[in-house]
Image (cartoon, rainbow over all chains, first blue to last red; front, top):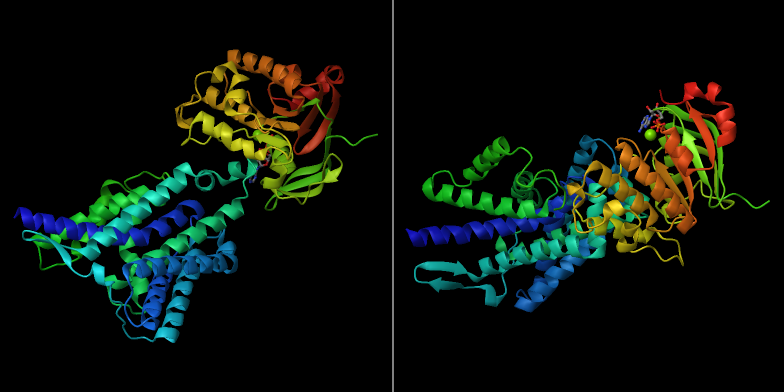
Length: 295
Length: 238
Ligand SMILES: Nc1ncnc2c1ncn2[C@@H]1O[C@H](COP(=O)(O)OP(=O)(O)O)[C@@H](O)[C@H]1O
Ligand SMILES: [Mg+2]
């Protein structure tokens, strides 16, 4: 029984950190720009396909260092795309009605899906994880896949990096100031437009990086962009829109509830995520971490 | 004649379709104190924001030391020695008093050494010992003083104070009047002070503009103001 529970916890944490990796850039951008980017999953998928394409062109398998390095490269590439998307799309969305934001970013998702289908086809692809991540730790009857440890470590690393950036670096402090009061930040001579662009670049970069890290976690197909974002939406809603820490905690909470729910009622896998989401919204409609942005 | 530090020339200001300022002209000479009196809704804040380019749409000329800044973005104007302390204070709640002050250092002009948080706090006895307090832990009065101190951090050429005494206890207003005199003497900054509190404004400035319904209806020295007091009474707070 105890071992079952430990296994479920490992499972939950893996799910949670994968979800947080998707949610981190999304909630950061929402906190600062108040744009909910429906295309976020699309750019994450793009990052995953980049790693897939690199792996294929190098003969199918990457070393661990290579896998990490190309995940970072995917992040950087998608970050540059973020700058383009900012200039072409997001700058026109500042201060407009949410309905337009939804339509515009959904259209962007469709565009990315189209591009992916055009380049890599509509079928599925597999990225094999680097050799060292295949296998597992065995503690008696408990099995902890190396890949789970890798995903959990990546999630925690992204949390710490973002927290350090926002609270201890000077550009990060400006990002926070702009999130809280862009008008006053302007009066303190902060170029708010520039901060918005930096935030978008970081948000997109996180999507590309997450795409790379998670590429070997599941099969790749052009629907991945839309699917991967549902759970992330849950985490950022429960965590408090715009809160990075909140999304992290919410992902863990939702992961635990979903995993234990599925253990107890195996006939309805995945349904407990939605039950937990609905329950949380009834109890704390503003999320775990109030409405305070990027904290 | 050299140009004044700030000149607003024939400016109109709008929020979308609503036309708020009408042909407003105003000058502030270097190192002088100018009061801007007027009732609630007269257009004082709109004029302050128009000078910074932060909010209303403005038509007309705004000159800083004779050079047009009318098309300069607000964040750059804020770095040219214009420091606006807004009426709603806008202290960042999530960081400390020291960090609130430090954030304003970036607005110092080229070649001007901004005040350190400790130096700025030392100007106002009320801020003593509060440097490590978070913004949200301050009382309204403390926030107001902090907002003024933050406005002084970049060593501005012109400090624009928007109704700093609003909602403050009389004793704090008295203190602030004394501090302002001292600070202006020390820093040599000019002051444009929007107020409804006439005695505070008189204490802090040498000349007066009165604004009503977005139009300047009086300009002159405090002596002129007193001579016209009967006519001006209806433009001032009751
Ligand atoms: N953001 C805004 N949008 C539309 N109208 C505004 C806005 N701010 C102020 N006004 C209007 O502009 C006029 C002048 O306001 P304001 O400059 O704030 O006056 P004061 O500072 O003298 O009290 C008022 O009629 C006010 O209702
Ligand atoms: Mg006002």
